[in-house]
Image (cartoon, rainbow, N blue to C red; front, top):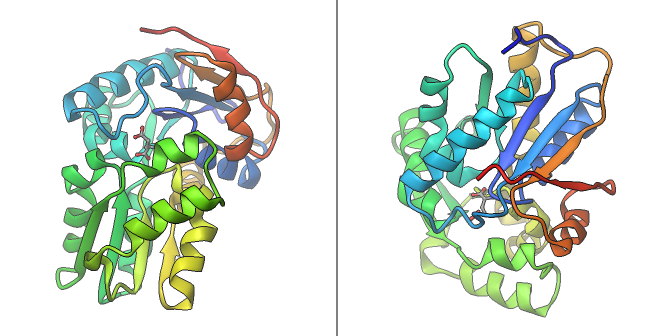
Length: 269
Ligand code: DGL
């Protein structure tokens, strides 16, 4: 692999197209950067898979992104960040910078010294306990309620947002007694920014809502800046790969990414 230069692309991956919310935020804030996105649509959803399976997929996808000469890999999936981030950093040490979506969110929330926070995420993310461990290491007295909300990612992928169904599903999850009394809620899945307005409507002003888009973009900018790897001028167009292609994935990308894009089928399995 060539040594990374500022003009090298940023690799971003997710189980599917939810990570496009993170890609979208990075492209808007850092328009001079080229991104290479990989959505593992052949294995979607990761949230119901074992940690071992998620690690295996994440290693293979990272290898693919490194073959595209990426200078940084953003693990734009909470399930993969929780199960595989440390394995990726160890395995590819010295070959690229890695950024996950958990650390920036934890740091942003821990600074606020809330009394009680809620976390909604996939089963894999909740079972990993990564958010709870990291939040507690920064704020030992924090009360934390983690709730697995496995219906949300498939519902959003199917385009069920801002309608009666999403309203009913959200209402049922967010009324869970464990979330009573929270001061803040972490949307710990990269699909959830799409339903953030509905969640804000549910809680009103009394709960602060956090998602990973802006905090992860700041982390990317800061890490690249600290290594003198911020690009000054974009050289090549962005590319968006998926491991399984269907026209419905392509049409759903419009929900997650502000510009029209073309998905390229890349069967790495
Ligand atoms: N986008 C993934 C995450 O952030 C969730 C979707 C899935 O279960 O694959 O965890």
